[in-house]
Image (cartoon, rainbow, N blue to C red; front, side, top):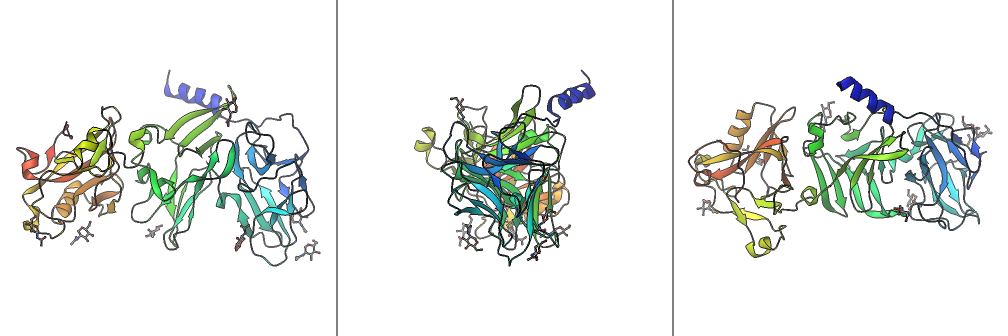
Length: 444
Ligand SMILES: *[C@@H]1O[C@H](CO)[C@@H](O)[C@H](O)[C@H]1NC(C)=O
Ligand SMILES: *[C@@H]1O[C@H](CO)[C@@H](O)[C@H](O)[C@H]1NC(C)=O
Ligand SMILES: *[C@@H]1O[C@H](CO)[C@@H](O)[C@H](O)[C@H]1NC(C)=O
Ligand SMILES: *[C@@H]1O[C@H](CO)[C@@H](O)[C@H](O)[C@H]1NC(C)=O
Ligand SMILES: *[C@@H]1O[C@H](CO)[C@@H](O)[C@H](O)[C@H]1NC(C)=O
Ligand SMILES: *[C@@H]1O[C@H](CO)[C@@H](O)[C@H](O)[C@H]1NC(C)=O
Ligand SMILES: *[C@@H]1O[C@H](CO)[C@@H](O)[C@H](O)[C@H]1NC(C)=O
């Protein structure tokens, strides 16, 4: 089959058509909530083109608790945003409208506010529109000014045109946050967001601890995501504005695409297959133990095809060999022999006797520092002259990257990835004195 035939099949399978489905309850012929319109459970409103709906739902396999949110018209149990995540209504008495002070308010049967968009405003006229992207936007009527939008407070779903953001001046981030369980939208322990300071990367955190890391953005792909080297991936973008806000997003496409953060911390990318009426999983992370952040500890490297999956980088040995032998790798590895160039006191004549070992096809470690955009030789000479520098890489579109902290969250990919150069004493480089081109990077 030619590429264009494959592409055509792909289009037929995933391109979404607007379907008119039988509906329960009342579906208003509008995409806008106004102060004159009260949406009562089980009424819904639809976005233009009927891709998304806004209304009440109970999570899969539950009947009691009612939540207000946004879901797909073709797949009503697929919820992309939930308003009252931590405050369900225990019956079907809920209703939603625009309050006198211009907020979206969700009320229970007793007229108590269960959830509100909670923007502080003086009394004004506002209305909330469900856009065709799935974003619910509250605007002031007279000026059109956006007061609040659901994409600014995502639940567990990343959609085209939703932006994960990081303001490097204030630290404010827009992140995904997991559900507590597949049947409970309460805020769970995992979040996914952009960490833009120094070299931008995407992280999933479990509380404050990193759980998964994408590797740096190189202008086209996230270099720690192996699938991105080969698969067409909707052209994600990462941009920044002059006020220090960085945005990671995907443009609107022809397919129904979403990336969901599961309650166990996995990102799962799915496309709606209109032939089978199912969501096809096209990517997920972490997919195995190797992809979990720091599985092999400092100076350890992970390869899911090896057994055991963790090994020490060449020139390093397990910090605690007894634990390491039992498969507890997180304490990682330590140098077998000191560098001539000591990163704590910069002795060793600029480390002229140390060399660099090339490790091909790698997911580069965390805590990279951005260097100049020059050629790989420049990266090496800058790193070589600075005893704090213990590893470098030269990445297309990014230029030099340097590492001065413990090297952590390293993976060996197969057939794709970056060249990572690590500083080793000459005695660990065998007969080579400088850069070694070696395809057997690890001790056995
Ligand atoms: C609403 O916002 C105020 C401050 O802007 C905050 O103190 C309060 O906790 C918020 N209420 C809810 C329900 O989020
Ligand atoms: C809201 O709109 C109504 C009718 O359009 C108008 O009478 C009222 O003054 C407006 N209120 C505000 C605060 O602008
Ligand atoms: C605000 O704007 C919406 C949409 O244009 C309109 O339906 C609604 O009546 C307006 N509200 C008021 C109070 O003017
Ligand atoms: C709902 O129940 C069905 C049948 O037991 C099960 O296959 C499905 O995974 C459940 N869904 C969730 C979200 O738990
Ligand atoms: C943001 O992008 C501009 C180019 O659009 C660049 O000049 C600027 O240095 C960037 N800001 C930061 C903080 O990286
Ligand atoms: C500096 O590093 C050298 C070489 O490793 C070592 O012999 C020396 O003791 C270190 N000096 C200090 C003050 O740490
Ligand atoms: C040496 O490297 C460290 C870490 O990369 C960096 O902070 C420092 O500025 C460098 N020193 C010089 C003189 O380049």
